Length: 159
Image (cartoon, rainbow, N blue to C red; front, side, top):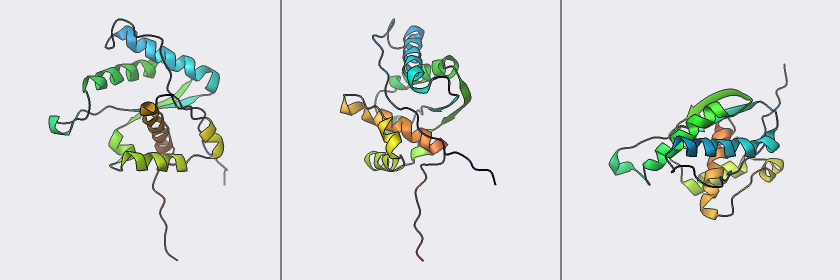
């Protein structure tokens, strides 16, 4: 039986751009953000082939919307740029938010994500200074763990 090495988290963080180019909803701005991601990844991942797994934004009916829906346009633009801009992408796929996190409370889900990382992987998570942005990094980690099958709820069976 072949032994498969468990995929490991190489890096997680929130790259910063120096300034937006030509307004936040412009191609130049999206390219700038994608370039920042590429430059952030380079020293952390090197030439390793990567799996690009991106959350596809969802637009909900007005009664169920949270936040500014224009942010989804911004996200979709950056996602499109990343899909073609990153080197060494071995595979690409997307997931919807409900596919990977369901309807579990956000704070409880972040705890589940943290529990699925080993000590070395925890050290590779670079959280931004602003605590209000931490959930973005944990969501990215959760999407990756979901894609690897490491995020499913653990079931305990009585003996």
